[in-house]
Every structure is written in structure tokens, then in C-alpha cells.
Length: 210
Image: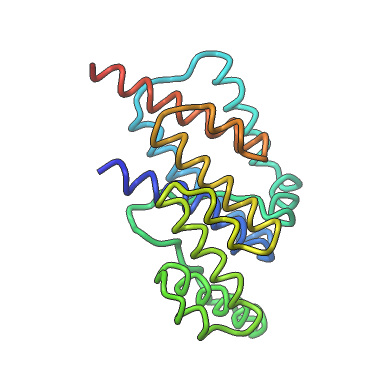
């Protein structure tokens, strides 16, 4: 039961930063709200409060992620957030905008999300030309994380996406093995903090059961 949740947790954690990098701030803000709610539900289920050193790191991440300037910067740098909903796919966007240009852009994003969620290469090839490679790279990232194989990330040519893939695999390994050493291999300091915090919470929960 925990394994699929971990895959979903980590998958959405990183995929949102790539898919939503060009979204307007107000839409990113709504997505981040879902992330915070879902993440809180997950961490409450983990049970224990981390020690002061870990808690301090958690507060830093929380305060930084709530800042509009940080949110915008993270979007531009392909930063990620995740949605821990009880579904096996990334959430689709609400494309009810009155502006026709924005609506078309939103629908294009939804087509990309649906194709990635399908894990079908054919679905990626049916997308607009500019989205095809991104879709294939995201599918490669998901498979690499599921199989816990960092070497599969080398199939991705784009350096930023390849690094995002490696980060996701290390995150998956850290959570599965409850080993924070994998967290140190993640390139983003903020993601390292989130990784260590989650490993700690899962370890505490396991110890409480023993």
C-alpha cells in the first residue's frame, strides 16, 4: 500500500516543476495550495514531529515556498511541487479562462499531462511538436523512478531534465530504503531538506510500530 503512494508522491513532486514552469503565477499558486494540503495529510499520517534541527529546516522550506518571489523563481528554474492526491496521475488544470489564448495554452498543458500519465509513447507522439520530447522525457523519468534506476536517466538528452530525473530516482531510493544518504545526491538543497524530513518521518513511524 505504501509503495504506490511513494511512487505517486515522488512522481508528482518533480513532474509539476517541469510541466508548470511556464504557467502564470496565479495558477502555480493554486497548484502549490493542493501540494501543501496533500503533503500535510501525508505527513500527519506519518505520525511523529521531527527533532528541532529537522523541524527548523521544515519551517525554512515552508516559509520560503510561500513567498511569491520564490514561487516565481522556482517556476522559471523548473522547481517542483507535488500533489499527494489519491489518484495515480498528475492533476489536470481548470481551463475555464475567458481569454482564448490562455484557454488554448491550458488545454495544451492538459494534453501533455494526460499523455505523460498514460505512459504510452504513442500518446506523446500525438502531441504538438514542441511537447513531444518533453513528454517522452517525463515518461522516462517516471519509469526510472519506479525501477529505481539512475542509469535510465542518461536516455534524456536535455541536461536539466536529466538532472531532474536523477533527483527523482534518488528521492525514490531514499524513501524506499529510508536512507537519507540518497538525499545528499539530490542537486537542490531545498529538495535535500524535504527528502531528509520525509525519511525521518517514515523511520519514526516504522520505529513506533516495532
